[in-house]
Image (cartoon, rainbow, N blue to C red; front, top):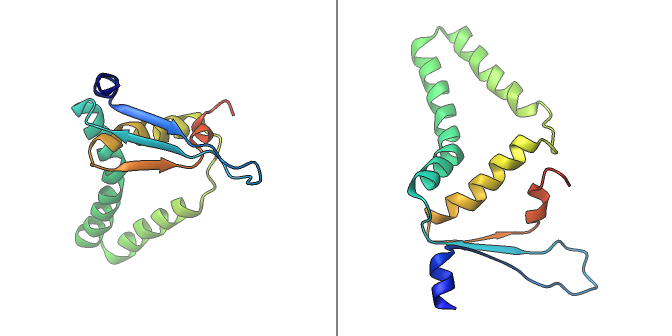
Length: 122
């Protein structure tokens, strides 16, 4: 059993729920570092977008006139309120990729309530 855990660093288990609850299954993902390149890419996509937005706002205020810097902020705010397609298969693939590979970077256990929701065919 110990050898299986070493060969398969991403272990997912599904807990059983009582019949009276209508909650989705809980999937627990624990991982050791799998592929360093995939892990770094997943963490960069996940956390890099936040830093990219901060860099865009700060650089717009430093290098653009005030009306154009405010326009950049308004465009970013507009992107926040634009509706997102929840059934977009590329978004689900990206979320699944980040959930699978970013866990290997941190010594944590990820609890995903409805892992099957990431399936684009659902």
